[in-house]
Image (cartoon, rainbow over all chains, first blue to last red; front, side, top):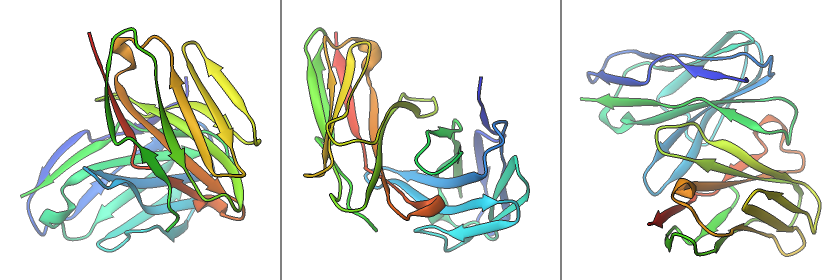
Length: 112
Length: 114
């Protein structure tokens, strides 16, 4: 059974803290994505990666960075968390363009 | 940012009734259209991948059609059951989009009332 695993499901962090959200996939996919989901706004792409050490900005990259040191792992980093980054973060992976996307179960982040 | 619209935004349907909702997308540079079902507290899961104009796909009581020339897809649910309650997302792939050739709609939130 294919799997995208987000290690942290629920986090509460203080403003200014550095936050790491980890995502691992076991399908040997080249492409990995980080989205955030907010009410009324749908899924918005933060960053994506099409290969190890490669990354591209999505629609809302400000305040975030990413790391892809190994093919199976894609990390989202909030350098200095702010309250407007309180959201649900969804990791995904995919093979070639057009193929099915596989999602993790989401990480709920609250910044206080 | 491409415009992918889903309507209605939310929908209440009586158990046993049939229903349908729409995904509209740009009619140019079409590559593929996906439908996903997202149940609360779970991961979104793929329902259909559609690539050809006129495609019709079916999985049990759920089916989908695709019109790439006019830029829309319909999702149909026949004889709704409580387990169909979920948010249904469509995702549009455009030609030449590379790894990020994908735009999601905001979803249709479906609630089946017993």
